[in-house]
Image 1 (cartoon, rainbow, N blue to C red):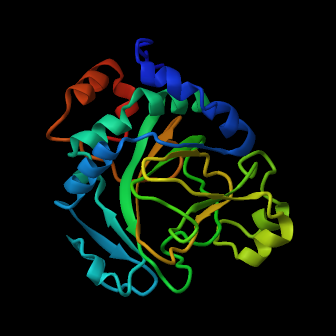
Image 2 (cartoon, rainbow, N blue to C red):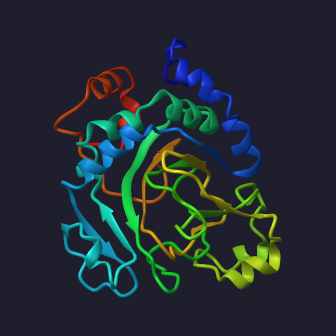
Amino acid sequence: KIYFDNSNNNLHNFKKNNNIENLNINGFSINENFLENEKIENIKEELKKLKGRYSGDNVKDNSLTKFDLKQNINSTRFTYDSNDLLEIPSIQKLMLSDEILKTAQEYLNSLPIIDIVTAWWTFPTEKSDIHGAQFWHFDMDRTKWIKVFIYLNDVNIDGGPHCFIAKSHLDNGINYNIRKRGYKRIEDSLIEKYYSNDDIKYIMGRKGALLFEDTRGLHKGLRVSKNPRLLVQFQYSSNLFGSKSMKMLLPKNQTDLFKKMKKSNPLIFQSFK
């Protein structure tokens, strides 16, 4: 397991949020005010330099291109390339922060392997989009994993909050009549048939909020009806058994923290080449 320096006061304060307890019971845990505004703006400035791909049910050309809010008429999302994101120093520091790694390690009860690094915009649309993960579904990525979402702008009910069915990450937490349909998108009407309004959580937060989630449970991104939403996502897994994915490239420009962590904990970088 990773050794953590107990002199990190931020980690001490962060642990008071009871992330592990909330994750075990409900399958998610929200942390307000995790990322300071200055760091958020720094990430946004770095993202302006990157290209990405537009996607959505009505998008035919998803070639690499520059980001432009005016070009989102037919698209639902604009996603950045993982290898480009990893060249951003602040992304490296976030990904390897004590606060996040500590929670991931304790929840997984194993060394947290960095599995996914991504970021994307979600645009206002008139209806939910399958490609934009805006229908209920559950993930089947690995044996055990945890996803981390960091909101880079304010997310209210109109801004596409993340939605999660509390306790659906548990064994038999997903109703059998839903499970027997197999791995496919699920209509709202079916969810409402088997779960109450109290079970369905709409996870909103101001920019800088961090969400831990076990996406084995039922979840979706609510359709954005107003301002575009921007977030960063990391995934940490207990092992790499399961879905095949392209290995990420080790950054050319590595922060001191990245170099230190790779030297002392090389196994958490198994998804890199």
